[in-house]
Structures are given as structure tokens and as C-alpha cells.
Amino acid sequence: MGDYALFTGESFRAVPGARRLMRRVVRAGLEQGVRCLPVILIVGMFTGLVLGLQGYYVLNRFGSETLLGTLVSLSLIRELGPVLAALMLVGQAGSALAAELGIQRNSEQIAALETMGVSSHGYLVTPRLLAALVVFPMQTALFVTIGLWGGSLSGSMLLGLEPGVYWSAVERAVEMPDVRECFTKAVVFGLLTVSLCAYHGFNAHRSRGATGARAVSAATTRAVVLSSILVLAADYVITSFLV
Amino acid sequence: MSASSDNLLLRVEGLQKRFGDNVVLAGADLAVPRGSVVTVMGRSGTGKSVLLKCLANVIAPDAGRIWFDGRLLSADDPKSRAEFRQRCSFLFQSNALFDSLTALENVGLPLEQTTDLKDREIRERAMEALRQLELDAHAGSYPSQLSGGMQKRLALARAIVTRPELVLFDEPTAGLDPLRRNAVFSMIAKYQRQFSFTAVIVTHDVPEALAASDRLALLDNGRMCFEGTSAEFAASTQAVVRGFRDSAAALAGSLAAIRRGEDIHSDDA
Image (tube, rainbow over all chains, first blue to last red; front, top):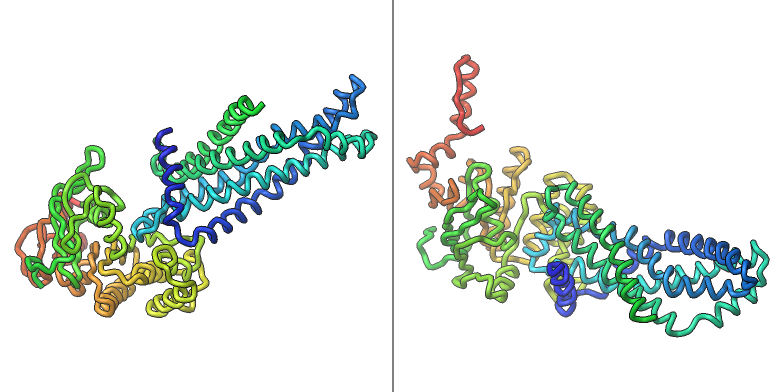
């Protein structure tokens, strides 16, 4: 835990000395964003579709189906959007990051950077961390937007709810604190998961009882599992403070 | 070239390193005169690469002192370490090339990350290094698209592009055929003279090391059992030196004995 905190601190401390940082941040952002875009769109759409379907039948029991927009939008913006988008990003970008750094550690590329006088944290980790601070909120916003359309598709086109009723409920329900909560979670999840995945990949050679390719595989698995748990735990903590 | 002169670029004293119960370095000393080629030899597993990685600060030694250009390198003095890194390059046995970067990007990386040169200047200097190593036609290729010998030359191009004063070579000829081995040693000798850097080479190749080095050191049981010139190495009567130096002749003798059907006893396969 302390080692992980030091690792993250070192990555941020490398910001002032990192050369051509912006270029690497943009490249890392494009990698994370483009790599995750399809899965964010697909999962966001299906999440909205299912929410619309389930929500409509539940609300219909109480004659409140006009509140479908409220249910879908608040569920997505406050909880499902940030959490599911983060989990998708962990599965795609986080696992790729851990594996890439693990292989670079194994093939002495990280040691090579150090011998060149290049900060391996500043070159390999810092750009990814900074990119995550932008990419996670953007992908979450995309997830929520697509999810809202998915909810509209279920409620309006399949189940006959007036589109105007759905969208006006969305507009009435969503307030600025909800949006702030959504983006706060996205930024925190981005920071936690990318640093944790980077930490495990970077230290793949320290995996207990595993070396070489097996150590990379173990580090990647550990990174994804722990990041996913961390997202849910952090979600609970943030929600308990912001609700 | 005498190691006792004051003109030492690198001096190592009492370097120790152990991994668990395995003592790899047990007080190794080494003197590297400025502008020379010093080759460290020894059997596999005697700690040659560990010694080099301790020098390059890839591995932290347990004890011992290292002076670079008269200045003691200390973990408590990051400035001296940083200065050392700027003036030293390391050529890994595995080459440690960035597999997701092209040859040109690999060579340009140290310049991009440690200097304030403009992109155009970095590109020019990287291309110049590639040209010197006859790799300019492969500037856009990825390391995986190059042969083993080309990868070695690419790693050397990356090592010299910053114009270092000291280059550490970790088994630069490992896995190469005899012709390539000669070519690599010739290349090191050529660029060592051209750029006037000091070289420390770790290798098993006795004939090439004898021909290309100003000084030789032999590591055995974690300590230097010999340090001297090529002529002194060739004339040494020390048992360890003779065993290492005459290994080719010993192999020929063993093979001849096998062909004659005699029993051969070897203490080190």
C-alpha cells in the first residue's frame, strides 16, 4: 500500500522534469480513448436499453412510467455511468498498460531508460496518469449519453412512452451536483485504476513465485482484479460523502 | 596504458553484491583509464553482468565504492549519479530496444528525453548515428523486423548518439556468429577511437578481447583475480588465467581425446 502510494507520488513528482510531456499525454489519451471507444459505446447502449426496459415495467406497476427518464438518467449519471465506464476502461486500457509495462520490465526496457538518465516514471507512467484524468471523464460522459439514448429507445420506441415525456423527465431530474458527482467519480477512478495497473506492470518482476511471461500474466490479472475492486470501494466512499 | 596513473575515468573498490545466499560479487576492484578499452572476462555466472549493472546503477551494490572522474558516486548524492548517467551509456546484452518504436525513434529517444534539442536536430543526429552503423536504410523498421546483428548495431547507435564518455557493453557479441563477433569488436574499436569514449566490455570471447582491449580483467569467485594489459594476460602463469586463456586449446585437446576414445573429466560444463 505504502509502496503503491510512493509509486504514484513519484509519477506526479516527475511532471516538472518530464520532457515533451504534452506530446506523450496526447498520445496516451488517444491510445486509451480509441482503444476503449467501441466497448464504451456498446456497453453504454445496452445498459441504457436494459435500464429502460426494467425501469418501465417497475414504474408501470405504480402508474409512474412517465418517471422513466428520471430513473434512467440518475442511475446512469450518479452510479452506473462512472462505475461501468471505469470497469470497461480497466478491462481494456488498464490490462493493456499492466501487460505492456510488465513486458518492458522483463525485456530491460525500463532499466534501459534509467541508464539513459530518463525517469521511467516520467516517461512511462506520468503521461498515462495525466491522460486518464481527461479520458475517464470523457468516456464516462459518452457512456452516460449513449445510455440515455438506450433508455429512450426502450421506453419510447419499444414500449410506447412519448419521447418528449422521457427527455423532459431527464431534463427535470438532472442537476449540477449530479453531474459533479459523476465527473468526480470518473476522475478518482481514472487516477486510482491507471496508477494501480501501472504499479503492478512496473513491478511485474517482483511477482511472488512467478518469473518471465508468467509474472507478466500474474501482474496483469492482479492489476485488473484489484482495480475493479478499488473502483467499487471508492464508489461507495465517494457516494457516502456526496449524497 | 597503466592503471596506476591518475588518469582513471572509473575506479571500483570492494564492490559486493549477493542475491539471497548467493554471493555474486565479493569485493571486486576495477580500474578503467580514460580513453581505454577494458574487458572484463570470467566464466558464466561469475557476476560480470552484475558488476556492469552495479556500475550503471541498474542494480544497487550491497557495499563498495565507485569513483567516476574522481568523484565518488553515492546513493546519497543523486546529483553525482545524474551526472554519471549523462556521461555514460549502457549496451544491454538483450539490447533492451523499445519494440514499439522504430529504429530512428529508438536512437532518438535519449536525445528527446535528456536534451533540449529541436525535433529536426534530434532526427538528424539519430540518422547520422544510424548511417554510421549502416542502418539508415532501416530507419523506419521496428526492432523485431531486424536481424540479431542489426539489433546489436541499433543498440550501439542508441548508446553512442548522446556522445558519452563511458560506454558499458554487456556481452555485445552474445549469440553472434564469429564473423559478426569480429565485426562488433571492430565496430567498438572504430567508434571508440572516433568518439574517444572509454569502454568497459564484458565478454567470453578471449581472442577478440585480447585483440581489441587495452586492459583485461578476469573475474573469479566474485573478485578480480587478474588485471593488466593484453600482453600481461597472454604471458600470465596464473592457473585461472591460463585456464581461461587456453580454453580453446584445452577444448581441442579434449576433442582429440574423445576421438581417441579416452575418458574426459570436466569440472565445468
